[in-house]
Length: 125
Image 1 (spheres, rainbow, N blue to C red):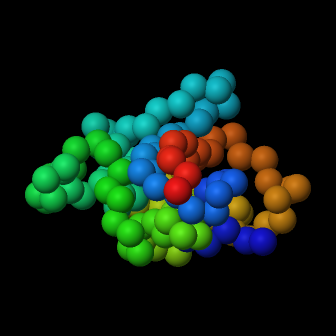
Image 2 (image 1 turned 90 degrees about the vertical axis):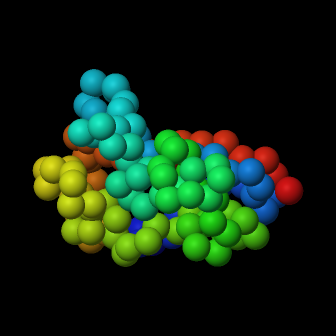
Image 3 (image 1 turned 180 degrees about the horizontal axis):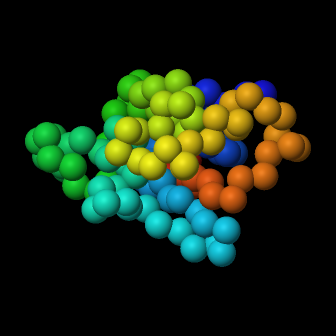
């Protein structure tokens, strides 16, 4: 199955609650970063636009907007654009980080030197 803009969270219960996640860039040496040019990947990918009070002020945390960026009943994260790690990678990121092959190639052939990882925690409902 080719990856698009909806990513399934591996949930035993099938329903997630209190989702908290972050996006990291993993390098060949195993190191990980979650910011570039002082902007978090959550903000660059459109997952952090508001603070805890709902004001338009990114606070470094995943904005849980049910039905917009996640679906608790299907355990899915929803990116605002198709193929977010390929041609639609946020413009603030270096083009060398684009990995269009993830959408065009079978999984067994892929071997990225750098890749993104979505990590987080949730509570099953």
